Picture: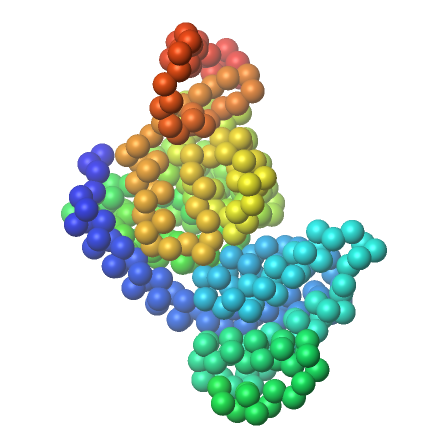
Length: 139
Length: 172
């Protein structure tokens, strides 16, 4: 097989980047479904399902450029890895609830970026116990 | 015609999103044929029935049969071209322990998620055009894990040893 030239590589990368953007755009609903499924598993304390979904979601969220969702997946993984006595399920439930509210219930449905910012605000609100509504209105 | 137009790739991932993403990017790069499997078991059936596959991208965590089980099965039990199939493992977890486990299972390359077009292209080209020696030993079957040619000041027994193991004798 003939090795591609640098020009072919350049062209291939441009085409692949366009394809990547198309897939991410066309499958935006997939991320919401994944968050919903993980939230249900967290709510039920279903550890095997949390483990499986968190594994998938951690890669997918990064691919969607959604760092808060990736953090949720990471937190879920940490919960699984922690010894049973130190598992903080309520904290994970709060985070899952906040991310789900921002992404799935669509407080502000304009864009992925807006959803991500909302998720960050909701997490901050929960963590600090402060009213971030004014900040949310600015997003 | 693209240099990759004659290449046939199998993408194994149970996440429909990741699977679609990788397949579409590969097609856009000019890869001639892209096949999909949603589990290790389905992948094994495809690989066994179609021995013209050039490269397989395999996710780590799947059911039934995860990526490591599939790779170990191919490396330890298959024969000939099937055993030496270039494999690129895909994972979102990049801690040293997991990467070493993947390397020691006999994968050729590790592709980390999120997957960028450049990483995908370069890993594919690495296994197609810069293949390493394939080692078949009692403790390890897979591409040579040493990527750097380090000068040694003692007898080099590697080249001779590599050919001394006969796969049919060992697993036949």
